[in-house]
Length: 318
View 1: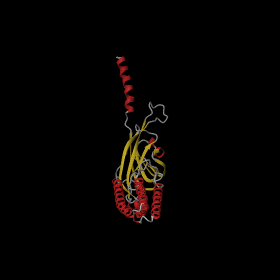
View 2 (view 1 turned 30 degrees about the vertical axis):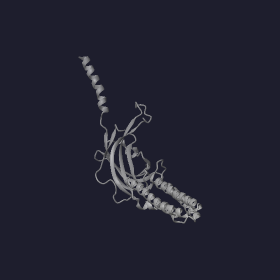
View 3 (view 1 turned 60 degrees about the horizontal axis):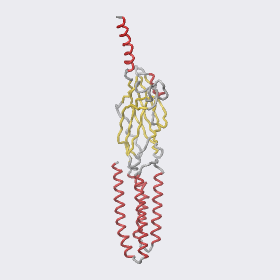
View 4 (view 1 turned 180 degrees about the horizontal axis):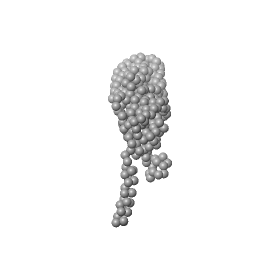
């Protein structure tokens, strides 16, 4: 009988810790209200986000004033915070200004659509201790504020678990893997690019048109034709360097690269046709040189317009 009681006691003592380990994590109800998004720096992949953040929870040890972590922020400051614990739960409200780092997708620039991401974690308590819950009551951003040149397409809030393949030096963790609960916000924005497109690419199209005029200059004036063609070539290259200086580095072939590549190719085609016309003039065949110029003028213009319309339409479809 004593042996049975001893075994029962050992069983209880072994089961109780397992139940204790299975205690559900505390819930932190979280919401935000964005007051402004500004200082979008496309070259440095940065933007500034001003917002109100509030959290409601029970465990005082969470101390989000000190333990708040914003993984994607280059820097952030708390300009205001207040804590109310009168009803047995802690209500924390703070004003944040965050300089965020993100990766821009510039394949379709200037008809690009971007995702601005914001997330928070608790730097001291993992997902076994706390989980976030979305407070979606009311508006999440000020409808009166506008992003200059951008429109907000979507606004989504969610919670998730972020895994880190490290124990952060904690030798009590059996393997290098930790998980933290995160509160996530994704803001979809689309660029209002109708005027920006012409502002950036007008020089390129003027360069092409200057080169295109060569087809209507008589082959006898071959020096003028070569001069216009070569000048247009350098003007198009200069326009591309100006646009590239305002964009982040990219290893992919973007719309900017495509349109400038097409323009450079067709300017080269115009210069080549001028060389061909020169050969015909030297062969004493001016009439044939003129006919070829007029034919190539129609073909080059038509193909150039079609290619531009195709690639721009594909970028607009996103």
